[in-house]
Amino acid sequence: MKTFEFRLPAEPTAAAVARAVLEAVAPDLPEPILLDAKLLTTEVVTNAIRHARGTQAVIVRVRRNKLVRVEVVDQGPMFDPQPQTTSTRAGSGQGLRLVDGVASAWGVEPDEAGKKVWFELVAIGGSDVDL
Amino acid sequence: MSISRQDMFTVRSDSTGALVLTGELDVATIQQLQDKIDEIMVPGQPIVLDLAQLAFLDTSAMHVLVGTFEATGRPVVLLNASRSLRRILGYMTQQPKAWVFDGESPS
Image 1 (cartoon, rainbow over the protein chains, first blue to last red):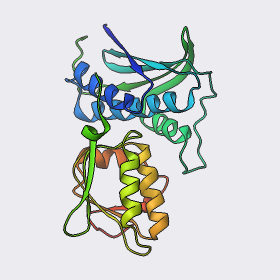
Image 2 (tube, each protein chain N blue to C red):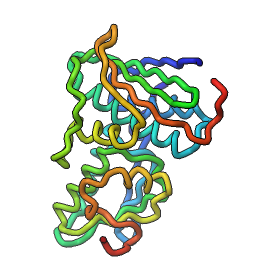
Image 3 (cartoon, one colour):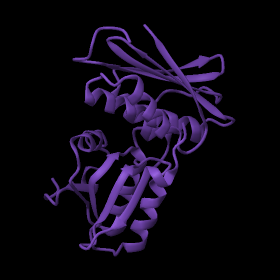
Image 4 (tube, helix red, strand yellow):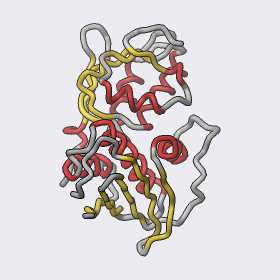
């Protein structure tokens, strides 16, 4: 199984670049799964850049077999992965709530560079062949 | 790879007063939409967005839809939303009355 890894400078357009890269590395995913991957990646990258203090760049890793796994690494501190459930106001809780609702699994783990937020989606109907 | 915000998203008014959105909406571009809505908003009048040329939106767009609903007192009317956009908006159920598709009545 191949892992694609790319580094995004912490700029407002980082999520758009991440979406374009996802499209390039996983063009054979069923369209709804690719869309979900782009949406969740957008939310996690946005959170990393907005809320993870000291983050100058995020690293995005994409792994693919029967699952799509995306990891977003930033230099910010760990946080408690409890999505906010009470507020409709802006904040990282909204993005994480979406990740919690859409992903098959997700989590927050320490990483050499800081921490990583990861999620997995089942690529139903996709190719079983590794990239 | 780099992407400029101007290439990523544009918003303009059409002859009916609807805002025509082109490109992708996320934190990089959402302020352009917010500014345009602030410019044309009249309390009591719904904001109408034509999404035929919009390829993507995220939770930052949902916040603007909810804020616009609260400011106008009317659900935002979403015209020509693709299946992809409807899928994304379907995940955002915190404030289900903030928008309606194609002018259908809010449930």
